[in-house]
Amino acid sequence: MNTIIGEKYNCSQRGDTLPRWCFTLPLLFVAVVVFSLVCVKEMPAQKILIETGFEDYAPDDKGWAFQPDTDTVKTGKKSLGIFLEKQDELHISGNKLDTDKSIVSVEFWVYIERGKQSFAVNLNATEQSFDNGAGGPYVEWYAGDVRYHVHRGNPWREITDYAVNQWNYVRIVADFEEDVFDFYMGKSREATLASRPKRDLPFQDPPLAPRPKWFIILAVAMDAPGYIDDLLIYEGDEPINLAVEPAGKLTTLWGRLKQE
Image (cartoon, rainbow, N blue to C red; front, side, top):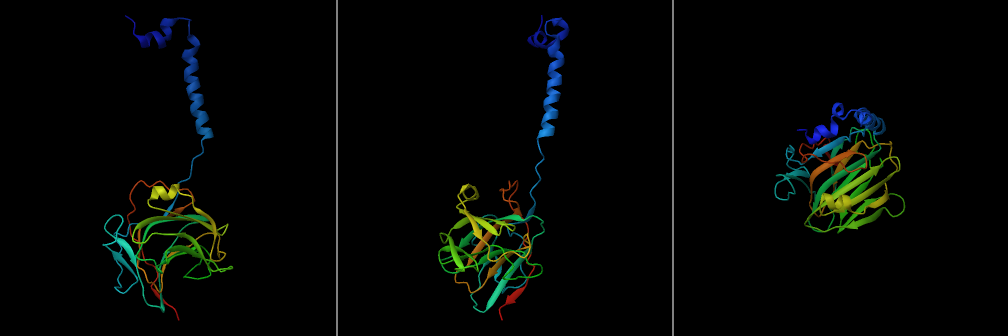
């Protein structure tokens, strides 16, 4: 007794009824595969520049403005606590960015206690050390607003308001060829990526180079402690698909800087 498969696909039993399909179908399949390989372009992988949940972060200086915190934590066991009350000191945590791309995205969880002045973050294109005129986005949490600093016209401009004493997710996309950045914020990464950003915000100054070279966190004359968790920096303006939770070490490359 013949099976259904034999009746449909056994060409030797069908004689001359459908001989050409036995040859045409394999050739058609090969043609589709070849066409797909020719037409589909390989997408370059996005490079992650910094990825840390601060689980291994342990600074040597107990008086340093950047300390690991185990009380105010979004994920894992630690976050980065940032606080400095002294009016005459500027503390900076700086991290080198190894990239030749002009567009870089920065993401992190942020928590601000109270609605007064807290920390600031900056991407810049300086070579060796912090330069306040090196260009790039300069963003600060201050008195219930997230604001950015520019030297053209009004130096401080509001981006959006924020809720204190709760975790929010932030994404900054900086374009060092166009001298502008986009700012996103929401209650989760998914909500932030889906939100409508504040677009084309101008840099603090025109950058000294067409690509970012440093990511820095600044603490000076703070009234409100701030916290960062799950810091992620990567190339490009497309949100990266994370396969694993951020884990690693944020290396503090700069020591304490004091304003003269």
